Structure formats: C-alpha cells, structure tokens
Length: 360
Length: 253
Image (cartoon, rainbow over all chains, first blue to last red; front, side, top):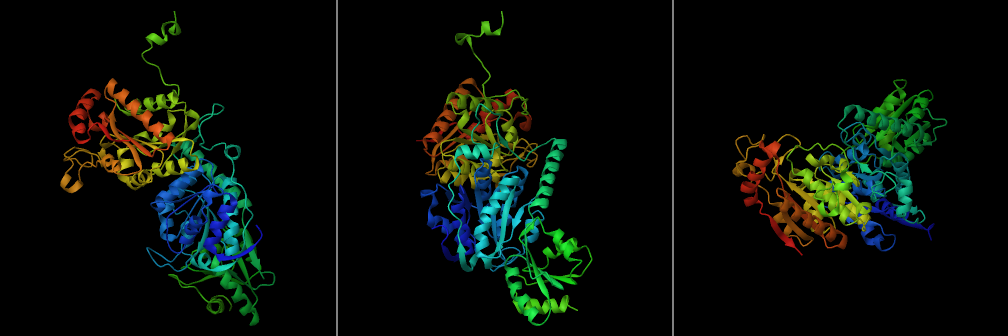
C-alpha cells in the first residue's frame, strides 16, 4: 500500500508526507498558493489515525510560535505559508534559530514585494538563505523541483533539523505547489512515544523529572560574553552543516562548455533548454542546487576551471547569482536571467538569454 | 538548639516553596512578581504537578521567570506565550501548561494570541500581571495605564482622547465561550495573597480538567516604575487601580 503511485499536487504531497513521517503537529494560516496543505490535512483528519494535531492559527505569527512551543517539547512540528505570510514568520524563525529548535517550515513562494501576486516566484531566496529575521543565523534550505521531492523533503527536512537542532525550510513556489505529478508517498511511520522523544531530545520541555535539572528553552542571554559563546556555538554548527549536508544535482555537466545554475521550478525549465541547446550544438549542463543553504559552492568553484561561463536562471531579479559569483570568484563570467512578478520563463527564452549573455 | 528544633508544623509560619531555587531575583524590592512566583510554586507543589508542568515565560519584567522556579520552561517572543502554550497543551494534553505575562505582553503586542487562544478554549492558565506600566524597559505607557497617569512615554499623563483608555482585556476575555475562569486578584495583603493562591489553584485544576481557558489577572504594583515606596504603591493601587480594575470574579464556571 505504501508504495502505490498517486497523482497529486505538490502541496498535497507535502501534507500526506507529513502524516506518514509521523509529524506531531501542523500549525498554519491559509494563503494562496499553498492552502491545499492545510486543506489536505484537515480532510485527512490525521488526529483520528496517527494522533497528529492540525490547527488553523489566527495568523502566521501565531502559527510559527505554535511551532516553537511544539518544537520545544521535542515534537515534530511544522508550518507552511507563502511569501507574505513567511515574512510574518521571520520573528519566530529567528527565535527558533536562537533557541536551537528543530522544525520544518514550507514556503510556497509567490511574487512580491508586498501582496504582489499569487503566481510562482523565487524572490524569497535572499530572505531565506541570508537571514530574513534578525541576528546571525542560518536556515537549512531545501529546494524541491518536483512533486516527488516535495514529498521526500518533508523527511529530509525534519531529519536535518533534528540532527542539528535548527529550523529547516522547504523553499518551493506556486508552480511546484500547484502542479500535479505522479508521486510515490513514503511508508507510514508511527509517531514517537514520549519516551522516544525524551531519548532523542533530552533538552525537551516535557515536564521536569527528578533525575534532571529543569529544561529551559530560551534565546535570551543578557551576558554578552556568554551570548558570544552561544553565537560561536551556532557558527560552529553551521560550518558542520556546510561541510556535511550540501546536496546538488548535475545534468549533462560532464562535457559541458557552459553551465546553467537553477533551483526548483527554474531548474525544471532548464532541463528542456539543455536539450534545445545541444540540438544546436551548444554543450550545456545544469547544476541544480538542492540545498540552497548550505550552498554547493565547492562544486561550483571546481566547475569554474571546466566551463567557459555560467547563466543562473531564477524567478527573481538576480539573487542566487550572487552566491554563484562568490563561488567562482571571478574566474569565469556569471550572468543572470530571470522573470519577475510571477512570470515563468520559457525554455527558449532561457536559451536566447544563454546565447546572448554567455555563449560568445 | 537549631532551626529544626524550633520549626514544627504547629509553629511554622513561613517556608520557602520547594520549587523556588536560590537564584537571586532581579525584581525590584516591593514588586508584586516575587509574591506571585511564590504562590505559583506553592500551588504546583500542592497539586503534585511538578513533573507535568510546563511554564511559558513572557517578554517583560517576568522574562526571567524561568530562572526562579524549578520546572520546565519555554521563553516566548513578546506576546506569543499563548501560541506556545496552545501547541504544548495540544501536543501534551495530560500536562499542566500556564503562561505568565505582563500587561504589555498580553494586552498590547500579544492581544491576538491571547484572544484567540481563549476563544479556542485552550486548556491553559494565563497568569496576567497588570501593573499599568512597562517595567522592564523603564516605565513606558502600557495598554492598561490609567487615564492621566504619567509614564516616560506619556509625560503629561495618558490623554485618553488621543492615547486610548486603560484596556480592560479581562472583561473582553470573559465574554468568550472558551473561557471558564476570568478573575481579578491582588497580592498587597496576606488575605489577598491567600485569595490569589485559591484562584491560581482553581485555574490549574480547570486546566487539568479540560474546562477551558483560565485567566487570573493580578492587579499589581510597580513601585519603581510608579516612583513610589512599596507601601505608597500599595495604597495608590487600591485608590486608583482597583476602581478601574475591580477585584473579583468576572466569570467562574
């Protein structure tokens, strides 16, 4: 049963994958284009089967703080939203990074700034990987490019979040969220018992037992000397994540003279562009960052010795391109092509941009 | 003769609650917080709930509440304590979950979280310290600041025409079906402390019995922020705060 193939939207896949992973609580507020996540959960009513709590909060602010409360109990807690709502969650994300709380946040991006549009966008890249909230922190960021990865990254996100006691985000967009594809949902896992949570998360606030000191979850430390130590501990953890958790995909990079670098839905479009370019005799490959933080800068640095130029393709005005430029450090030209405000580029417009900006 | 020879159950008049540790409190002398902390510690012990209690601390003067009571604590962002408490109680329904919040935290920046947690009838207790001023940040105007009251952000007194009047948020909360207890108490006399202990105990019992949201508003003094002696602050509270925030049950079902 668990191996059956289903046809569903990316948003629905996230909801089903969450139930099957054994998530303890989902807290969210409706916003297009991701409302199917909470709707699918409410329809599935997992509180009757796995015991998972699903709660519609009064705001995105409340929802992320409910996630804080759940995560502080060692529970698998998650929320989802879209760009304007994720802006509201930044306070909570910063607090969770500061309190070292693991959780999963899904951002099904739409065009901004402001209320913007409900069409797909990747304009929250900076917000996600460069901070968003206040303070020196990092958010583990996964960028799925298919409905299958929407399902798979629920488990990956929680696994990484709990491995490092840090929030993780699935950064996707309205295209991946809304499109229907076939998907193999993961097998059902039972939710953890209280004892299992205690064993996995000795820091969790489950009620003080006589065998230990009180567990206190806080991001506050007024002694600057101690607060600096806390920050140094966070930074050491971030270096560990950067060392061990980088994920990317290479498509036809072996003989490539030029590289497209794109993530998520933009990477899907680039797959077609590669075919079209190769039909014209231009050897192009695609490097798709799967983790946006940690960013695959080492592999990009190596490609700087192999290819003549790079074009990043993004549904924004040029955000990831800055990280690609840092990775290749001036060795080769790195250009950007993007569409804005919810417009999705076509494969041939990407090819035109490649020829115009990079292939010379 | 040592202390243990003198202290016997029949002549014991005071004992430090077992759940209170020896950390130095940062509260100003004369402040109501210390008394309320003690009462909370006593009631948790009396009900045998130490292993089941999760406290949610606010932002404000009680931000360090977690340093003084030996229970598990979560420190919330400003105003968000009821959201945290909602998730904790939903995910751990057999635990006793309470928030401890000041007037700015609960009735200004956290109004939405407070109202909606109460409207959902979350089985939590909210202990609400109302001293009509922002103590931690140095005496600015609170939502519950009285009309004409001087604070550092209302130096000519709170002008209710332009700044609004003192927000009676407990009255608003009492209207909600999810609320089973909305009561106003104080801790300025021994008798008042006893009453407060009874109401906090009832609130915790309500939470464990799944009766809905219990809110205990403690009308409190901030003698430092009010720039008075502790004794004068108590008198000022009785004369000025009590007429606006009358002591007693607004709802108790």
